[in-house]
Length: 589
Image (cartoon, rainbow, N blue to C red; front, side, top):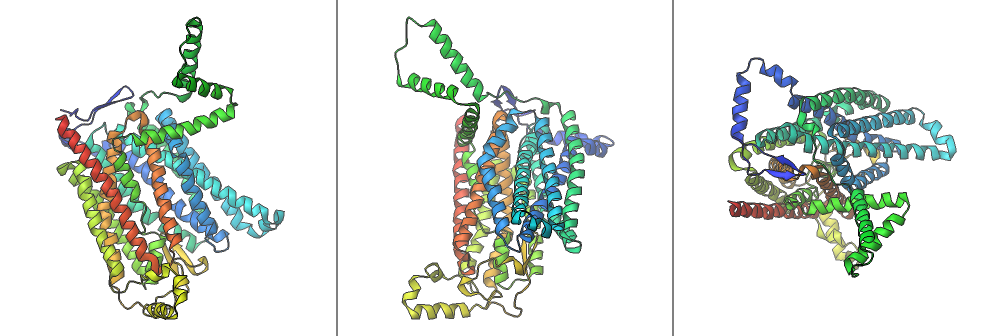
């Protein structure tokens, strides 16, 4: 029998989550049916997995390739890549609530098909533009005194940004909404689908960039663009067919709760005022601060041109989305997850660039990335086991403690032998007053002759002319060989903490994801998850600002400590949420 403890009314639709006992009985029954494997292959879960794998593979290839293409186009400089990253983060930050609201207001099949079409066509057109630019770069630079090149760069960045926005909408629609409906609001099924989708994401995050990187290395950038173009066209057709079939065989996807239109509220308010004015001419209401301000407000709205009214509606929608996010019961859990994005403790170009300054080779880094992918998969397995035995909220608590405990190794690495951290470099102007201080800093630098022999002015990432980009790893060409730090203890502790922490990290991520899926009303599922994406991008921007403020390898220890503080703050928010949720359950029972 299904449990109704977490049943909630969302937009007039009863949402009921089933227990794991129902799940086990259905699984046993399915296994007893001959040909159940064929039934599974034709079922909605498998179709969603295949569609998601194709989409994730294309996204990972494109995100890796577009960064490399922009670097190659701008004369081996990181400027275009930085601009692209800023545009992508800023657009999701500003438009996340609007994207989620659009997902909520439209039928599920139209949202999925439109997002899929816009994403793949944008990538396809962008690939064509890049192929033309790479093939006729010299001729393009001669037209309009080079301004045509600027136009091409702008078109590429805009199309890539549109593709990312469409990908965000598709992710919200499929992974935050469709999955919940397909599982029939069964907690066990939902946890299993979430974990499987995350495993697919982990595998494609490693393999997809390597695949397109090999094509670009063995052939050329033009061939790489053509490969991505062909992949997106084929993927568009397959994903469209699979999602359409899922929509047909799951009737519940065609049912969505009604949403209240903002402009409808304005029309109803104006109509109500008009009727009140006609019926109460002889008996006017006494003017109050409330009705006077509302009259002026609505009069201003009706007098505005259509474009301004549209803009006002967009701003109001964003504000309402953020307000809805703030009032969610899982607000603290979502904020805690967002805080985990402000970190340098991951396998991105920043951490790998730092590893090169500590004498770590590219082959060893590739091996460490593979090990980190395995630990990430272990985190998804641990989530499904813990959720079934300990409950969802307790799974988040255990995952948080494991994540923080492993990251303590990273903090220890800051003070371990071999660490290049030098606090005096944060105050370069104060050191100029004392020659002894300068000599001390010079001797300290000589103790650590790292491969990048740049002193305190050498950033974590040098100019693009000396590096290759493979996945998220930076491979240096012009690096002096034979120079190693005095001790590897610091870097060993750092990567030991980063790799083992991914078990708790991904388990915690899945916990918060399922809390959002189970708790948010169906009518607000899109807009709240859109704001959650905006928060994630905002906190991710902060960690790049941190690196810009302290770019030298000697500053990396400070960035590690700040990252751990942000992560600890995020988990503290989750602990507060868990305490409130458990107290509410005790009072309810």
